[in-house]
Length: 462
Ligand SMILES: Cc1cc2nc3c(=O)[nH]c(=O)nc-3n(C[C@H](O)[C@H](O)[C@H](O)COP(=O)(O)OP(=O)(O)OC[C@H]3O[C@@H](n4cnc5c(N)ncnc54)[C@H](O)[C@@H]3O)c2cc1C
Image 1: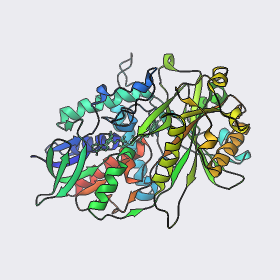
Image 2 (image 1 turned 30 degrees about the vertical axis):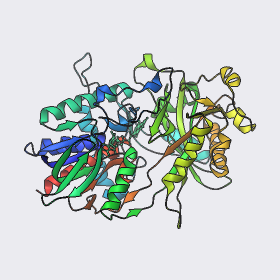
Image 3 (image 1 turned 90 degrees about the horizontal axis):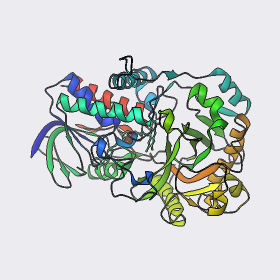
């Protein structure tokens, strides 16, 4: 059995940056990453071809070295206003220190430009004029500095980081799905589908897709959970020009809305200028997402973003993930195994979108989805919230509520399980849970920051 000081389960941004910090701080540590998906360059998604999503057993969008973020738009949100609750966990000052460290580390792995300088993009700063425009229309524009790496640059940075990890001596195993962890006299035994490993400490960094692994692990070791909110809604796509007065100034508008009928909170976020809508496979449930390339030649005429409605369940119901999954599954079942797409004009008129209406639409869909009726899927409360949000956003960006705006359903954000942890994110002696699977983070910068924080914690205790 191979023996390590620290095993990191999951090769996403959290796991990668934890291993980087561990090995740069103490090169003698024996560190391994065990990742269920492929090495970064072998990750290929068939959905980008004409075939559409093939429901691969291991989804190349969410799994493999680089994690769910590898094919993402690479928006680094350099603040704590959204993307997780790390600010509440660590305090604002400490959280920002670690978020800025993520930015600094990633900048070191950018390729060089023609002037031999790192090709690392400038930051989009928050904008007072747009904030006021939103406030005047009962919307709240979230204030944050953002760095847009873009899908291509983000991929190259991760690739360079992984090469460096190899040079630092981090052992990286791919196609290595961890099934079980047990206690041993020396620490822990970690079992994959085909191999066993032994270690003194474990960092669990399995992302949203690893929710079941975390839930099984916590039940094996009797670790309790806090319940968390879940978000469900749609991916919205329209002509890029409609939101350009925002995106040219702040890159990513993230806007909160308090809906009229139910006074619920919805949010518009994950904005992709000139982007593509994508499908992702979350353990057999296909949901919508989006990304965009930084390369101008790869930009589309469209932009896309999510509008999600938040639900926080109270007793006795404690299975918010199952709730959201069952709604997304219903969309897949009506959509013949795929995500649904509907014109906004059809939705508000109470009719389905069919191939004929879609073919005449001025907004050309960038994802091959099944034309259908999202009102047959989303509960009345969520659908009402989303339609009201579209009309509210139309006031600050006229054209958002156009008939030809496309809705893809469903998009869901699962972060329901939040294992009870110590202030240093240990859930039991020697085991840390970090990143999106901790229920604390929802984005690259905070997941990476948690990885670096935990590495520092381990180093400081040696
Ligand atoms: C399409 C898309 C676009 C996105 N765009 C952005 C964006 O622009 N900006 C942003 O901030 N965030 C974005 N996100 C979210 C962001 O990618 C995540 O918040 C981030 O990747 C979380 O990092 P993580 O390390 O916690 O987990 P992940 O990146 O999910 O990595 C976890 C890894 O663990 C592996 N794993 C799971 N279970 C096991 C197991 N049992 N054994 C071994 N390995 C396992 C998985 O295969 C995966 O590679 C996007 C996500 C998607 C899917």
